[in-house]
Length: 294
Image (cartoon, rainbow, N blue to C red; front, side, top):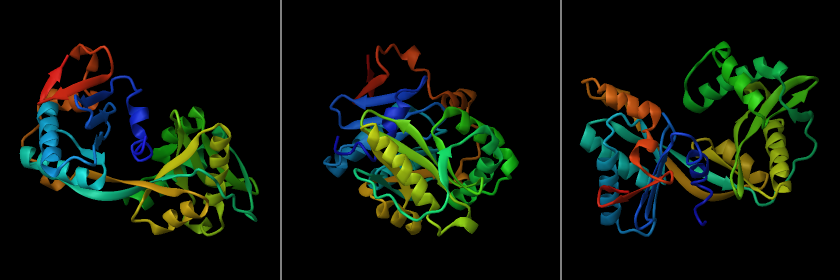
C-alpha cells in the first residue's frame, strides 16, 4: 500500500488480456507488461544491493527477451536493470527519465478562470488531435502532424473520461481520467497549447477531474516528468503531494546490435507473451531461483 501510487499502473496492466505478470516467491519482486508495452518493475526498497542485483539478473534470464525496449521502476532499480540487461544483450538500454508520482487527497480549485469544462465530444476530434500532436512535441520531442492523431483522438473521446475546457466554444485545454483502480483514479493527457498557457486552464481542468474522483471515493493521482518544473508546480498548487519517484530506461536505438532479432523474439515482444500457454491458474507467474513455479 505504501508504494501503491507510484506503481499504480500495475492495476491496469495486470487486468489486460495477454498481460505478462511475474512475482517472486518471496514477494520481493513484481513485473508486469502489457502486450507490446513497456513493462513496470517493483523491487522491495529494503533489499540489500547484492540481492537486488541477483533478483534482476534472474528476471532477465527468465524473460529471455532480447527485444525489450524499456523498463519503468524507481530510478535506482530502473538504472540497475538497464545496466544488467544491456550487458547481457548489448542492447543500449539506458536510464533516461525521472517521474514523480503525485496523489491529491484534497483539491484546491482555482478561481477566476475563464471558460467551461465539459466532457469531450466527437466534434472536438480535430482540436484533440492538435493537442495530441503538441503533447508529442512538448513531452517527447517528436513532431507529428495533427492528422496522424485523428484516430487516437476519436478513440480517446469514445472511451470516455476526456474533458476539455472551452472558451467561446473553442477547446483550449484537456485532461483525462485514464483509469480507476480500487483506491485511486489516474489522470493523464493534460495539455494546453503554448499560446494559451498561463491562464489557469490546465489547473482548472485537472482540479475539476480531481473533484469528480474524490466524490467517487477515489484519490486522484498522476505522473509528472521532473524535467518539467512548471507542470510539477501546477500540480502541487492544486493539492497534489509527492508520492514517490519512478524512472524510465529506454532503448538507445543507436546501440542496438546489428543482427536481426528472431521472428519468435519479435512476436514475443508484440504479444507480451502468451500467458495461457504457461499453465497458470492466475495471471501472476512465480519466479524462484530463475525457474517458473507452476
